[in-house]
Image (tube, rainbow, N blue to C red):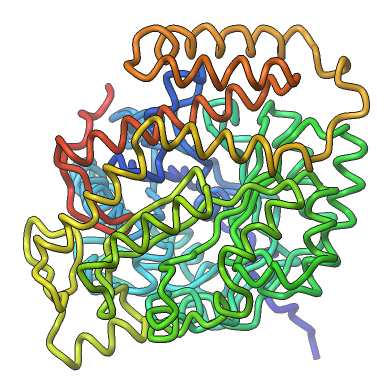
Length: 536
């Protein structure tokens, strides 16, 4: 009997040659895109490379030609759409308008468009205009999508949905197609070690989309990605894991490799990640993070009110008093950025006071405040749907009927923004970090080795832009120069750039929130500006 080997996503060999255009849609400018920092950073035009679509680009059969365009850097050209046999797109809920706009442009050129990523996986009903839907992670659904594109590049008569049941193990993931980007155009590089989170916070869709049992890459995969990004010129790399310590044993397995890598690179690249506050209970992990030059983490603090944390099922934030946990993390040289949510059922008129008191007590420089949004496939969405409290009306940045009037919740959000992002307060919080956090960080053993001509030229260019825009043209230039002289006297040249860049974005964005039409939630799909015209 003739044995026929099973075809997998990694072994699939197409019959026909195809030209595949991978596109990542633009974000509407918001807090998390850090747009206001880009003019200070020279060639930087976008925040981070999109991992998902670059992974798909790396999985495209090698017999096919593939191109990639990130519309956060530049719009897709008509000639590129004309070149393509098929357009592959990925995106999040906040990019829904831009995704549908891409579909219209592709269809004008007669091209079939396929959409994957977290938004369509959670809510395929939002994308009736898309030809081919890829729901779920890479795996057998991806293989079926590729087979269909191999058979025909024509648009289907009706929408086809491919759902992944058997996921490709992360140990078999190729390195994302970083070769298709110029990493110097991004503020940060990024890698992913794990996927999934064991916690079941009411508002979070991660367990439904990616599971509660985190899946992992192997450390050599991560080191290869770090090398490629670093050799490409990135100064900072972010671990985009849903929760870096979702599996503490896995974190302990990877971190010694990162320590060795940093020692080999002499701490020339800052690492950062997203994790939960219960990391404060893992001193071994924190010490290895310090040794691996993890300088920044993002934590979903959500609220300083214990009853609210219990109501949202985020009790992991209660294992250690929040301020104590933050001090513990800072003691390892790690600065914390905090996510805060307004619009909870437990909110009261005093909630903004509690948030502002928390910011003052914690001295966290970066605080991202968002209105609560009910994401599909979350316990919150199901609860509010049963209570008939979902409202997707025009002009709203949340789909929730709050227990307080929507206008009052937005006004509280604006108050937090106004007071938290006041220049004097931001620079004061950074001054505190300079005293209690930065001295605990690792330093290069051979700092002069990093004074290459390219690094010196880049530093001079960034400093001149910063000195002009912030040190001369801004109305908070006194705060900037006070910080700059303090850090320069201590030899912390890079800190000057980091603080000035982030503070400039926070201050500028904060003022826009009070004077312009700015989205009050990182998950708002409301568009406040038209997409840039297509390049020709």
